[in-house]
Length: 257
Ligand SMILES: NC(=O)c1ccc[n+]([C@@H]2O[C@H](COP(=O)([O-])OP(=O)(O)OC[C@H]3O[C@@H](n4cnc5c(N)ncnc54)[C@H](OP(=O)(O)O)[C@@H]3O)[C@@H](O)[C@H]2O)c1
Image 1 (spheres, rainbow, N blue to C red):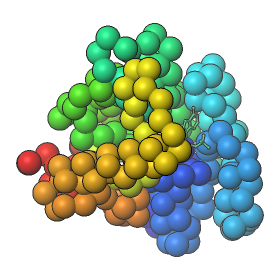
Image 2: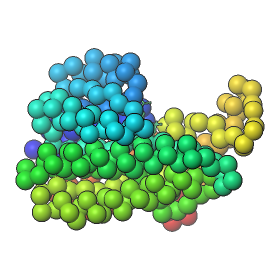
Image 3: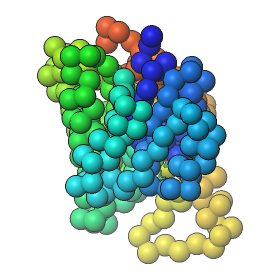
Image 4: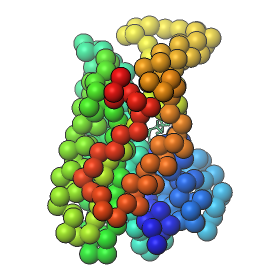
């Protein structure tokens, strides 16, 4: 049995890439423990496949709650075979406008929470084997303006991936990262405003369309990725039996542009 046919914890499960990953696992006959904040969205997910979905609601900014949330997730079906750390947030701030609040939020959600989740799940998997996939970003290796903090958290997540892979290999636990380029999700549909800028609703919509088109044009394949295209790579990496410590890029050619 592959990991994706077993029981997998997916964080950031309510939207975007995490949601597509949940659907990919369910389509393979696997079970999912879905983690996010939005209880209504989690409830709808559970209702869609009640016998194969359990949910845990937690805000990863509250990092003290992560170990207990991990325990509840592991216990939901009695055991798990894998973990996909997909929850993530990005703030778009030019240098000079970066706030301590946004640094702390991004470090907590993008780095501390995946570390604490991985540690708890790795202890559960120790000796039995299993697989962890961290969802990083091409920005961890190819920086862009206004996302320096986000990029730094994802670069740290890459290093965390390699360190965990080394330490957990003898326990039979594989740890890899997937690095997407731009993917059409809510994360990219947040209008990026200059400090102090205020726009009408129509202008905000226009701004989003402009920024999506500009981002798509950066990718040699000429478009943004779709969440299900990233989910397919996450599942593939989750299931590879001789792969650990790898950073796997899926980015429409962005890295070679
Ligand atoms: N979209 C891209 O272009 C892109 C590119 C490279 C990498 N990535 C990475 O891919 C991952 C998924 O991104 P996405 O584009 O699918 O994002 P998204 O559509 O914004 O979804 C983010 C998910 O994370 C959850 N989440 C956010 N803040 C949370 C918190 N404080 N506590 C718990 N859960 C939280 C959200 O659920 P709730 O709101 O219900 O909590 C949601 O399910 C992220 O790690 C992101 O950095 C995205």
